[in-house]
Image (cartoon, rainbow over all chains, first blue to last red; front, side, top):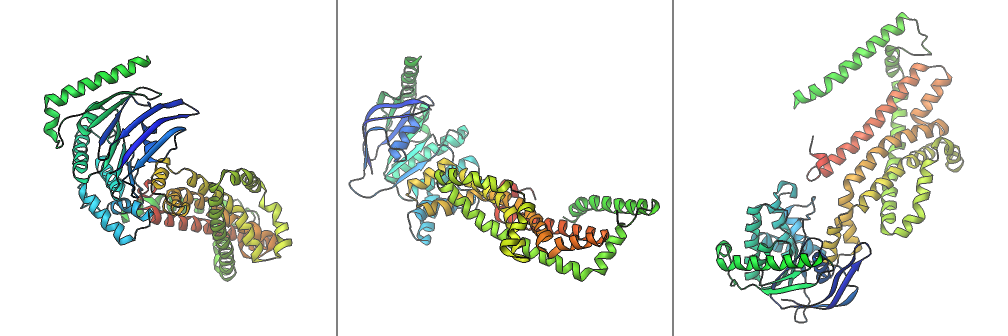
Length: 250
Length: 255
């Protein structure tokens, strides 16, 4: 499980100006953290910095898994599967890229796909799958290298309500069972509250931390969690914070 | 299946037969001289009488055009990969590639004869020169249009440039590669025939010689054969494209 430390991280782009403003943050090993903020506030940029895909202009970022070599998994906004590969070949891709033998890659891909409930669609092509199934393949692909850190960038935003809730519950179960640090970016308050142990609300660009809330809904969560009064209180509380964050800028 | 073939093939063939009969009739009634417009039946007769000569010319041209096309495919793809690898190389070379394309092949064919002599090598070079540009342009476009998120995915697992090319960029570019090859296939035949006008051999030479002998019927026969050859080339590329893309690309779904 990886620990993430950000020290005075700031980043900007030529077209948009400053996107992230001096951010100090620590994510503990095994935590499930959600970044919540209005669209275009820089939360995806932040996620890319944590993923190592983007080098921050200022400040330091450190990801450490107890000194061991580790992998990161990344789930994009859309499933981003390779259309010429079958479900199994898509899920095996990361292991192929890091040079594992083909048979091992396939075996582990099969296991990862079974974890997301796709054990019997191995030979299908992405175009034969529904949006929810594609996203499951994408999650399996992110899990296949047994990452210490899993990063997700609004992965369920394009799905319908039913599929979204189902996938949230599955992701939560995967986290409960697999033991990894998860960073999840979303603009949905309900999603952040249901999924995470800790929700960090970011302001509009440049992103600053508006509030850093613990979500105490217990470790085991399922659909009944969504009906509890405690859940609703947290949702409305954090919605209020998010509203404040946006008003500040208007 | 058979009903669909009939539905697709009967109307154009029917129209062709009617048009040819009509042409034959008009040409005979109006006494149009054979050297101006030959009747369809006399062109048909040429296919019978000179079948040996036409067939060997046809295979010669298809060999030259095929070799030129193959060279275009190999050199063009490699060039596109080189061009896509660095924007510096692209800026340096691309203007010349565009310039190269605008030079009419009929104008440089004599230069090719000086370099390669009369015969096959010049014809192959001519087919190659005419057909390489669409291969470079389409493949380059395909290689540059890879989804940035997929490139990020590959970077996440520290993929090597070779892995990035073979496992992502080339397959991603496949549909565009084939649309370039489709254009190149037709152009290669045109380039070969033009080359043969100057360098001799093949259908181009048949057209040229028959013209000087006022054998217009034979000119027509050779022209029809070169058109058929172009069609054959394009069909082969279409079949390959369908086979390669059938499982995943929308362009291969509606067949």
